[in-house]
Length: 116
Image 1: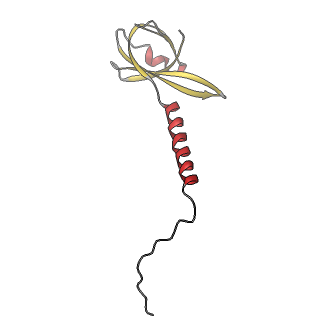
Image 2 (image 1 turned 45 degrees about the vertical axis):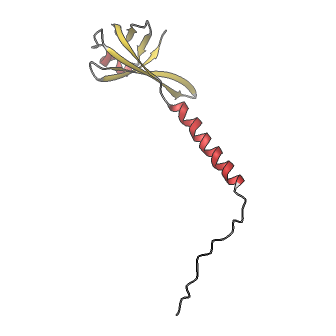
Image 3 (image 1 turned 90 degrees about the horizontal axis):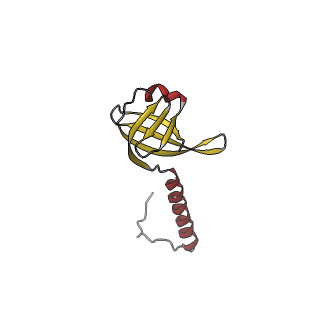
């Protein structure tokens, strides 16, 4: 069997590239829009007071710690350097905002809801 060597000859494009490029652009925009919703916003604060499951910050924001994290936050002592990040969660079909509160002195985060 003898193979004949031929020069590479690219095929002509059979389909116009515009619909494909619009589809690619739409997919990229969709991915960008979906990823921005998932990003968390974080800010710094200081702990002013702890009352069982209630955390009061220097900014006068009040958070109620979720029941599973109460034992962790009871031992926090003011003034503590705190980072707070918000997060949106789907709870039984309802979107809820929860806050992850990180105590830099202890290095342990808790989850909470904002009371005011």
